[in-house]
Length: 458
Image 1 (tube, rainbow, N blue to C red):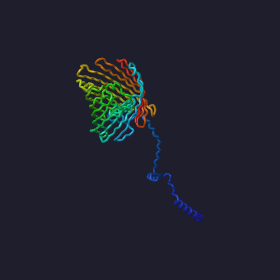
Image 2: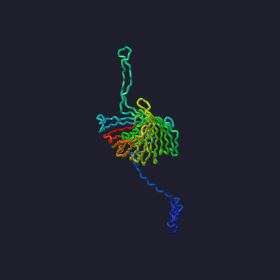
Image 3: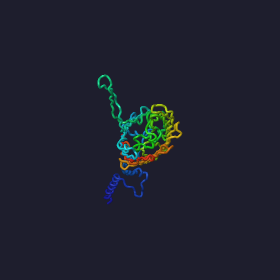
Image 4: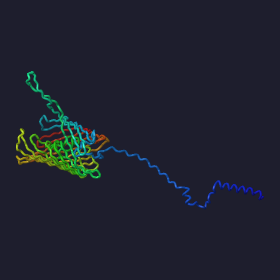
């Protein structure tokens, strides 16, 4: 029996041994695996991060008037932003201002009882640039709708052929009126900036034809006016640019600006035929929150409130001559003082000025006194991506001959402007419709009507 079981026992041992070589026996359930071995054999796997959801970029809203960036300005020139041609040495831009007016005058002569037509239509062409560092120039031509008949040639004719003159043939032609608004050269000898490229101090010298530094609105260029024309409370005292020289001193990005110069005196709103004398001008302006330019259009939009306070002075001592050019021995002194204030916030713009004039001479003990003031308000807002509305209104008052019996006159212009922007400027096209009223209280006359103007900048 034992001999029969021995082969089976030996075969079982061989089978068990071969099985142990093929597969290792599992450890006993009550013997835990060492922790170090577990860390080496089964490394810890970090979970994959969940993919972040894709966020579609927010669409960039169309620019609104409230978010329009402040336009770069150079002194009082606000009419050359984004012109049609812009190079360092030559910048070309301009504007067209067709205008139609209808007005009825009560108390006027029959010939002047009605005013209608497009007589005040005009266009401007502006050239500017920097020829060398610190030297800049500007020319601003204004072509008006007034047509002038001028003599272009005179010829001596001999109808009989005897060598004797039988008469003259005069050739004439009609030409449009051309005015020079600006024609100057500017030199900046001093310009100090800090590390942030912020201008701390600057000095400018300018020579040529320019706007006299006195009234805030008088310094505004034609295509930067809010209304079709400057307020009559300003044009009653000074109504054009003038030839002369000017020096300017500014601090902290023109937050403080002082201008002064001497001019020919032809810009004053008085008869200049028989008076000769220089015109001294000075103006100072303080804008603590940032420079407030002379622009009155949609480009005045700012993200933060800005305001400025200013004052000006004109002094003109002159001699008076008669029609033959002889000295009348009359010596006169013409003094004008003015103050201005302006506030701009988003599409809201407030502006006002006060002007006082006194003329004295060596023949009369009684001075000639006159006073004027105006205020204007506008608000520009967008109603569509490519359309903005700007209701606006102003009111002006003047009183002349105050030393005798003051003559009061009142002016108002009220209406709506429609702005159509392009990719370069918010006021590329402006269509304005305004009511205009004028009352000469002490003279028993008045004028009322309307004006429509279309302005295109290029």
